Length: 206
Length: 222
Image 1: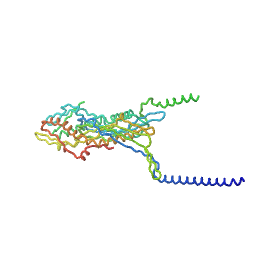
Image 2 (image 1 turned 180 degrees about the vertical axis):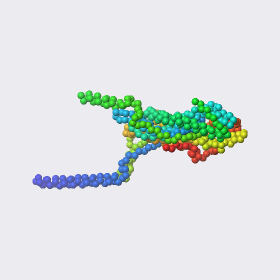
Image 3 (image 1 turned 90 degrees about the vertical axis):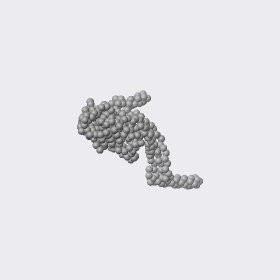
Image 4 (image 1 turned 30 degrees about the vertical axis):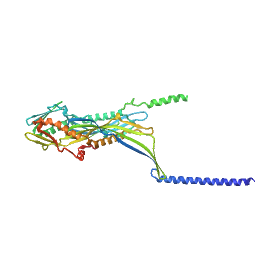
């Protein structure tokens, strides 16, 4: 009697097992096909970055009339760095700044009679050779060589100022100033010779 | 006991984290291990009369979005990831216009007993400096994003300078340069013995094509 009842139960169990096995196999095959399709597709899952750059209209902030005569330019690069040691990790910022120092004469500092004609000679009283502008760094062309950690505006201004002072110290040398002065004398002689002056005498103010 | 130590540990960790070896937040320079180096690119003798200076300001902005792209069964699904990343960077570029007297000679001067005519070389414009307004920089970065690096800011500034350079030709800088050159030289020429009405300062051409304007704008290359 019990054996008769067990036979239908075993048959149902086998059927369920077969159905489950077939279902599992179908799922495995589907996953396999899905993965195969994904591996063939390029960048199936990817994260992309979209950067939109916009700019305001250019605004002319100032217009200034100058009267600066340049006689020597020194183009230079300067590597400047900041370092801060911390227990949880140091911070570093190393940048390469580029700029051009221009040496010459600012005619606005000269008197109105800085040029006097005496016969066929020109007498010039020029102010001393000086740096024509204290803003000579092209910060947009600066290269960030190494950066670790975040740096605020005060630190970046400090780094800029440090590079500027280093450039001044290395380029505003007595040799360069003398070279500018000699070139000024040569160029002024040529300039006034074009107008028929045979000799040019330059008196440098201090 | 455990509560006591946990209450003591956290403040201690925070206190240690706020310390820096140098004391405070003042940055220090490393003078020993890394020395600054300098390379003088070029020393050039020249004879340039700068007559006009323009300062041009521009604000560059960048909006960096991250998007998730999923390709499933030939379907492309895009969705924007959370977290914004925006930067506004003001930059100011200084231009100077000049007349180059390096090639100036007698050929540019026509003298008679009663009159003097000077033909000046064409004026040129060049970038003499640029500066990022670091105090004016604004960045808005979500918790899941990283702050803008200094290198990214410099790259944006470079693009801004290039854009300003394209637009400088539309300003009156070259016209201002010519007028200013005349105003600078006229008293000098009059002192050579010619009266005001007998001195003429002119340029090679009165009008220039856009292509000629662009040639007058000097771009400093790395």
